[in-house]
Length: 113
Image 1 (cartoon, rainbow, N blue to C red):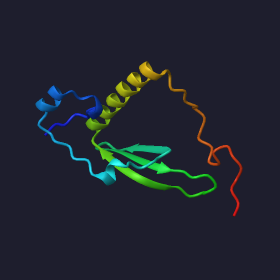
Image 2 (image 1 turned 30 degrees about the vertical axis):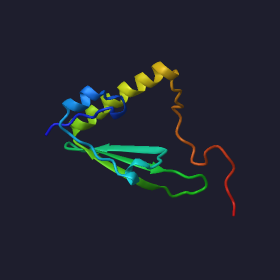
Image 3 (image 1 turned 30 degrees about the horizontal axis):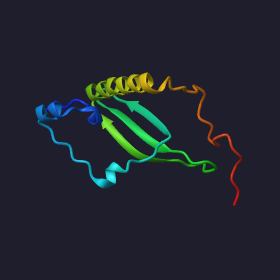
């Protein structure tokens, strides 16, 4: 089965009726997992996306979620993300990114106990 990444929020009723795939979202998964760092690696057969949460003053970070994709699905995800970023910026203005590396102390003082 070939499944494309879809923007579920913007599907119309007509589009939903034409799709044969029903997607279930549990309450636990719907809460999401916060991540402020992603590391992407790949081999010739898969892309691995590790989502990590870095906390101020803590030198060790944990991978909170790992997603493994085929190269074809990784490229579809890239296109879907680009489309959504374009629509977001059209409505809300340009997203400013700081290309510098993320400071591990988040720019604040180091915490002490």
